[in-house]
Image (tube, rainbow, N blue to C red; front, side, top):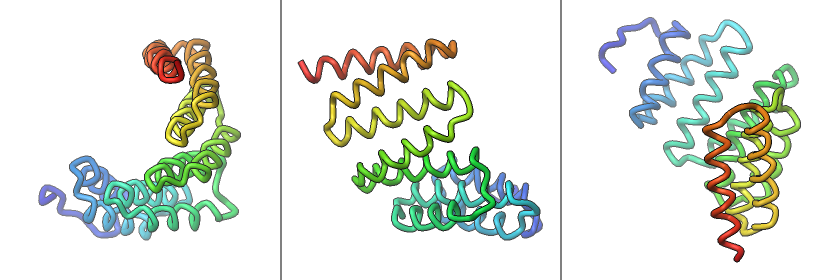
Length: 177
């Protein structure tokens, strides 16, 4: 984006431009911006967020194997906080679904669920698990986790998500007859 005339070491500007490029599906430039941002990060959180966004850009560019490699290299760090690790595990699960690696995706989503800090995060992880079970043709498990997500969304007062999972649940029930 020509509007950004920036210092190549300005983390915030690089991250912002990378996010703009990601939003307009300019994955090549987004990947480059996020890599530069990670190199100019001043703390661990900035570094991990830049790498997470880079993995999202790689996924968008359908460079799934490279995205998985980046995710696993990054989460193997000993000093990554559990809240950030959970985001990486969700991203890994989503990439594994694209690769039809359903068992790996399920493991990622289950691990992310264990790191969820609140009911909203738990509900989203339960919903992710349900989706992975649907893709792996395990409909009983898909229904179980969709129902758990639905109840968690209701408990947490997230009514849009509650309604959406209720509709999805009805659809799942209709598929198994």
